[in-house]
Every structure is written in C-alpha cells, then in structure tokens.
Length: 350
Image 1: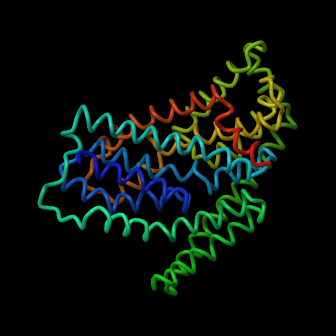
Image 2: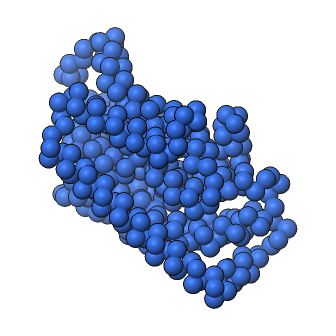
C-alpha cells in the first residue's frame, strides 16, 4: 500500500525510542535501513529524510529518556513521575506522525508509492508471527526499565543497571556481543557521561554566580508581563526556549536556562499544586526541546542523517523536517492547553 515503508519507519521509531532513548543510534539505524529502501521505491526524498529524522528524535521524549532524568534532577521532582507523564505526549506525537502520513498517502500518493507487485510476501499470519517474535526482546527490555520504575521496584539508577544488563544478555543471546562491541559501548558511555557531568559542573557554577549577582531577580522582573495571565508568561518562556534550540543543545538549555526560569514558573498561579506544575512544565519543556534536534542550523538529527546520506543535499533534509517541526509545535500547544494529558497517569498510579 502507499506509505507502507513510511509507517514502518514511524513504528520502529517508537520501538527504538522506548528501547534506547539515544537519538544518534535511532536516526543512524533508521537511515541506514530505511532510506535506501524508500529511495528504491520512489519515495519523495524530503518526506523520507524528514520522517527518519523526526522518528529518531522520539527517543528524547518517550521514556526512558536521559533528558527527563536531568530535568528531574534540576527541578527536584520524581523521575518516575516524569517517565509516566511523558508516555501520553510521546504516543500522541507518534500518532500525529501517523495521521500526517495517512494524509500524504491519500492526497499525494505519488510521494509514497506502493512497492511493486514483484515483492514476495510470506502471507499475513507468518509475517505477524515474525513481527511478534522480533518484538519480544525489545518489549522485555522496555518493561525491565520502565516497569521497575513505574511499579516502584527500582530507582531510575537501578533500572538503568537492569536495562544495561538486559541489553548485554540480548546481545549475548543473539551472538553479537564481542569484546570490540563492548569496548566501544563502554567508551561511548564514558564520553557521554563525562560530557554531561562537566556541563553540569559548569552550569552549577554559572547559576550560583548569576544568582549571587541578582540575575534571578532580573529574570523574574523580565517575565512580569501580565500577572493575571500566567499562561502568557509560560508561552513567552516556551518561545524563548524554542529559539534557543536553534543554536544550543538541549543539555546546555536544561542545565543553564532551566534553573533560572524554574522559580518564575513556580511563582505563577495555574490553580494546581506546585509539584504538579513542575511535572507539567517539565514534560512541556521536553516536547519543546525535542524540536531542537530538528531545527536548523544546529539540529543534531539533521547532521546524523546527513552523515550517512552524504549524497543528500542538506537543504532537502531541512525542507523535509519542517512539517514535523510543525506537528511538534501542535503537540506542544495541546500539552500546554491540557495539563491532565500529562498528569493523569502519574496521579493515577500513586
């Protein structure tokens, strides 16, 4: 059917997001597997590149997400609550991608043509069994991490250890665990951890000096736009962070900007407890920061995809991600307008 490959990319993006939460790995894997097949099938290059980049970035929102862990630390709120609160917006955003693909398949099928009749199919039930069999391992890995956190069996740190052990066992059972692969994984993990720790140290020093010089009072006065309408202040903050996402990585925004604006948000009256406000604000912020991976000129997902598709002009990738950035902004507006979309699951499971 028209759009078959596209829907497969979107679904695998969700599975990858819930399994790893690593943007680079998801984008590179989807790009290497799906882009050649979509090209061969005659798919529009803008649509293909935009879908791959956007689906790969779901990992920063759908738990387990390192962004939510750092946000929880910065805002002093439960990471488990953030994980539960992010499930609804993450699946909603994936649903928006699917609706967009349905629209393109109906109104512009030439951009996503059906594959040729020469393709051999094993039949519905054999294909369903093969799909189910291949999804067992990722589902077990997802449940080992998210299930232990949501059920209160383990802390996020302990569940990370469980997930790492589960990934090692899966690699061992699939006979793909080698000393070289383990060494590369340990090195990349150490580099990422060291980068985040040093940014946290620098951000903490900056925040202390900034507050000592009265910067927090200056920021509070800056956002006193209309005290009777706290949503206007929140919209201005989100607009500022969206613009910063064009030029800064999410780590810098989370560790430098969030500690400064968090007191401003806590001082606003949204008619709910401050803890609920922080959970709602953190998830809305995560949806906002997800766009930073797609917005030029420094969107990381764009460069990951460009790195594996060297013959694909960067302007094609830029044009391809624009509809998906628009869908993310729609999701952000819905999250801001309907806080229960985020809060119902964390409150229901307490």
